[in-house]
Length: 396
Image 1 (cartoon, rainbow, N blue to C red):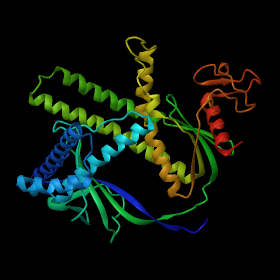
Image 2 (image 1 turned 180 degrees about the vertical axis):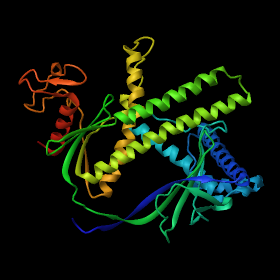
Image 3 (image 1 turned 135 degrees about the vertical axis):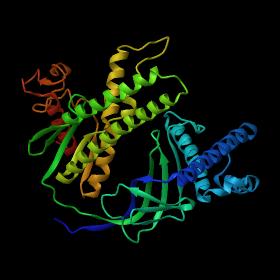
């Protein structure tokens, strides 16, 4: 095992906040003011572009914000950096829009925010501190929090805090800090593994020693139970009168059910990615474009799609298992533990014989069985695909 080395970088800690009633009102004011500034300057940018054909710089928006605060004194009741960060978010949204246009992707022009949205957030960059299990957030003050497994690092300067509220009314804070983290090239128990992500079996792993393992069946069962409960609440919601207190109560239950599903998925992906990153030095996985894979198959009126219902079901399964989230977790954790993540092209990994290398889609008898039409090699289809992925990554 090599000695650990210190790497300076950004780390984020996400905790749940427990504000009192007075603090909830202050947080609501911050959410509202940040949303107002974002929408105000988005409308101004659009109007200015229509008149002149030119954009408005971030510096110009900041100077206009100072003038706006003099006209509207209630904007001064919230943290000033909260409003500045709203402008930064708007500027970033424009930059992302232009970048996607250049790359030929879906542009996604910045949208106006609504007070009826399910998610609200703001960010502050000054006046923040942590003490025991209390977090100081700008003008909001000290708020109790939970969620850290270890004690918050002492003496670390907080870069920013992003406060958010979800549809179920829960408050969270993402604390961004800049600190040195120890990266250990700890010689994992095995050198390399190939991973095949799937729908029927979420993860199939094959190591360079030939061992094969699968995981995720219990996770799928647990997720199914939570989905059934959420759908039960959704059926109840459909029968409630709009605007009634009972309907609002059920809406919160539906939101909590969605949150529980997301928490279960995140926990599973965290546990699996950590275990793999610690055990293997080199991890090979397919470079899947999940956004493209989960596009609708409806087509157009002139050219309607085929097997639309089946494709929609497949899309739901891919999204509910969180393939993208798992890959992103695996990427930063392999780097953290001194390992390496290799992404390979997914083409023909499920149609190639891992024994003789013959590519023939007829070898895939069904979703679970692979039998090579050339050499007769027989193996579980996911196991075969994982072996091909590993071989591609290692250059075999």
